Image (cartoon, rainbow, N blue to C red; front, side, top):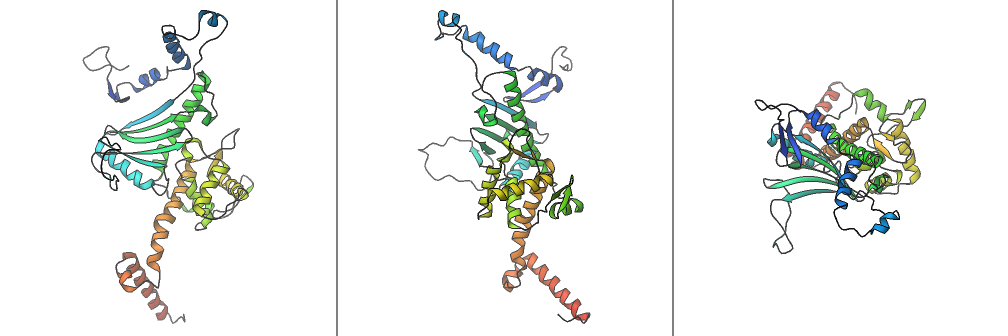
Length: 359
């Protein structure tokens, strides 16, 4: 590892709880962390098993009975340090508000810096995140959880905790192939959540991409029906794709159909879901996980799903009532958009009259 100035043989390593805040040689530190293997875990446990009392007798062991090791809980984390912690926290709180109506996490937890029990009097609710409150996003998938929070006031911590390896089709025994598979699941979930946060900041597509999505096209020689913007079914479909729960293990026909049906608020059949999955694949929104019936959003698909959802939920839906011609004058006068629209409408009427075109 790197040398500390004036201290030969010493490396610069600054901790941050159960993570690292700074290191003079990150590559060397990563190599040390990568040494954790199934063999290392087994060696550590078996060393202690030889010293601890065992239910197995010498004759049991001679007969071939032994203790084996299984994964009970595995956690994979990602810690991003901010040069300006105050700006980092402000960014994280803004992303929570940004995703409350888009990604819809199962739970946005606010952890207070005091202990609250059943005997604590009063009613507790939080509307504004203030000093003394540590916000976190928690995404649950079966027995496992993906969590993101601001750590020690200076780092963004993302961690996937796997409590049942069967949730991801991985065996429970402590073996190298199982550990590698679990690590791939955890690191992919952490990466997808971080990518989702950054993809919302600049998600507007160019005109060609927009046309390719909303109009029918041909992809790899196969017809790809358009995803018409404003169609309630398409709006519900793209909004369901943005759901945070899809980040952990992807989604299936059944799991996505339940989300779409809930947003659409009308019957939505498995055949319709199959049709929509086909056009999402051909439009490049999703890819199928090889050897499974699960799908994952592509980075481009995530960006486009968030763009259409944001435009519909935050621009079109709130704006249309202000453009209603039957809106009372007093209500319209309080709306900058309504006032501007009425001025534009009046100006257009004047131009039409000047051109002597009958309405």
